[in-house]
Length: 222
Image (spheres, rainbow, N blue to C red):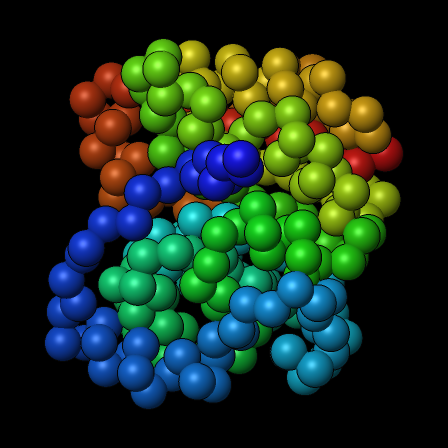
């Protein structure tokens, strides 16, 4: 008997706002990339040859669109499972007039495994993944040895895997897991300072105001 894979997320029945629904309906056919188990042709997807960054768990799209707007020379592939978040991201992309963002609404591990060629990404961003704080749920956390090895294989030499979390115990786990992953090198020796290019979200600012910490972990493919 085979067991279904352990997911790092739970699909919530979130409600679309009218703006999110419109953006999802109108823009997903143009900016969405359907999941299929075959390597993507980034030239066909983005219409140009450029460095590609994968954003895992783009949420409502605030961070992804701000980074993409600041780096028009780079293409961004956002992966998000929740439809209202996808709609929000697409609305922001439209409002900003961005041409360097595409989205896949699917499980990120399966996308990396089945759709991304080895050595093809300049960076992978995992910002504020679900920490699954209860010990019995730690197996659901995204950053595990198998994921780290998969992510490392998809990066070009010099490509970066960047994880940020506001859950200190999870941050320690991420630091340990990536530190034991062959082919990855910690760029900071320990936790990294928040790079100025990573936008501070409203969620993060609220946490800082409450005295919560945020930890950045930044590794590079050797």
